[in-house]
Amino acid sequence: MAQPLIQAKRASLRLVCAALGISPSGYRYQSKRSTENAEIADWLLRLTATHRTWGFGLCFLYLRNVKGFRWNHKRVYRIYRDLALNLRIKPKKRLVRETPQPLTVPDHINAVWSMDFMHDQLADGRAFRLLNVIDDFNREGLGIEVDFSLPAVRVTRTLDRIIEYP
Image (tube, rainbow, N blue to C red; front, side, top):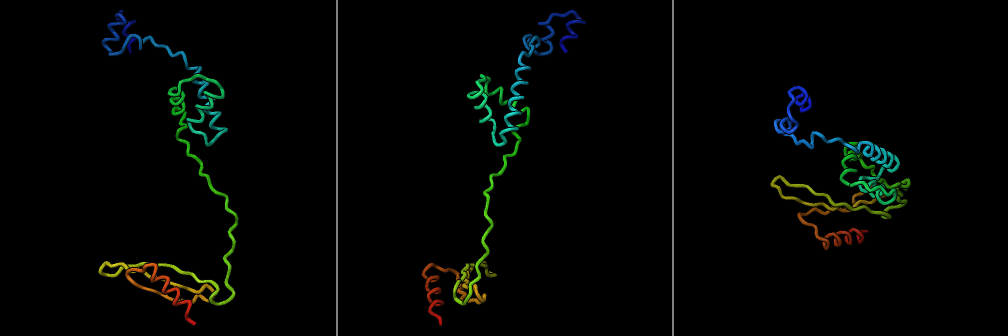
């Protein structure tokens, strides 16, 4: 906007810049680092393509300590954001699981028992708990204990009673 006013009106640079609210040094500024910015962008793109799990910190430390570039971290981060590399989604590290072993089926009664706690609520809002003990061979319910509270002593007493039952 300032250049046409200076040429057409033959006004001084100082007056035009004051009228437009910009500084004369800002008007005269020429960027000298566009080739260097392109080099930084090229390095960042190559690093993030080869090392998918590297974020900005590792990329900057590699460029600074391994390659020896003396670029400012704020400048490198600005270019990193402009390239939208900070929006990359980190891949999840998943554990490789072996194929699970099939569950063993017991071959006779009382070989394996399963025990589980359940809970529910009465119409008046009071909660109660259930302890279920099941034989895995024939799926028979060996015992069900129901109460508002099932402390450990009561659970062991119930299990002892089921064990003693003929």
